[in-house]
Amino acid sequence: MSAQGAHLALDLPLAGASAPAVDDEPALVERLRAGDAAAFETLVGRYMRRAHSVAYRLLGQKEDAEDLVQEAFMAVLQRVDTFQAGRPFAPWFFRILVNRGLNARKARALRAVEEIPETAAHRGPTPEREAERTELRGRLREAMEALPERQRTIVQLFDLEGFAGPEIAEILEISDGTVRWHLHEARKTLKKALAPYARSE
Amino acid sequence: METWTEERDPVLAAALRDAYGDPPEADWEALRGAVMAEAELPLARMRRAQRSPWAVRFRALVPLAAAAGVVATAFALGVHEPEPRVTAADRAQVEQILNESLPAPSELVGSDQFLSAAIGS
Image 1 (cartoon, helix red, strand yellow):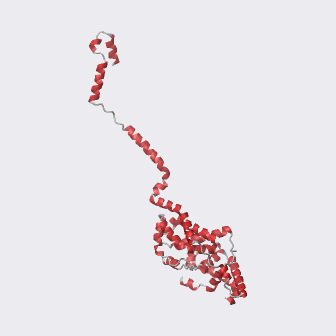
Image 2 (image 1 turned 45 degrees about the vertical axis):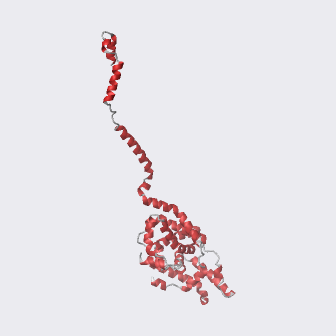
Image 3 (image 1 turned 90 degrees about the vertical axis):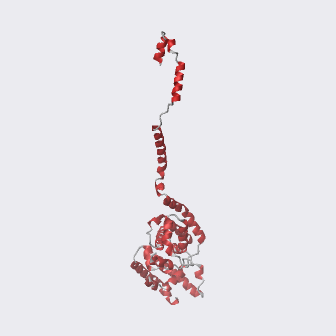
């Protein structure tokens, strides 16, 4: 297992209560190639929550996210023969998930129009403050939706999901420098949208 | 890796989380069950392919090969069918039957029957 793969798995805040033992992944993938259901179930259990979280960020709906997770794991079975032995499993898996998620988003022309979660809407102490926060959320979401798709995906993976830059580069199959540039541009745009509210943050 | 960690913007991340909220909890056991149920068939195919890749690839040829084997066996048995053995007892029995059924030569001397019997034998 490469250091990069180990970092990825240990850096997963949503992966579960205990850090996944990624050292066993080359063996798990080998067993999976032979059709071992237990090995597959271990990988599913290990990455299911994180996958669901990323899928939800991409598609914005719980049911769509669940479908995407299922589809991504089925794609793993179909393509496991093309997986390069010795490479970390996680970036390969998340590449499949993100590519399919982006395709689904394009195909369905999804826009993030879901309601702001109630849990988030009850945080403000005063009605004025709450109104301002609601407006800020709306502005930020609009700004996110206006970003080029690649920039939006990078922000979602980096700022919302906690992936590291090199991990995103591997998932999206672009260079570190390109990820860095897109992130910089996206943040510039988002900060402009946030600027009127900066005093309250 | 470290530089990327340092570049994180907690204010922006917090604002984004506030705007989008946390992903909803799913029924993890149901999701795991659905994934595993859908995986059953592909996993079974992978196991079978692993066990006997030749048989899977050439599965269509198996009945043909079996039929060819049957034909070849039948042909081989036909070609090498052993000659029936005639024992001394068989010969003696045949001779006895012939002797009993044919009239003695002395009875036939001077008659047309002798000639007929000679031609018939």
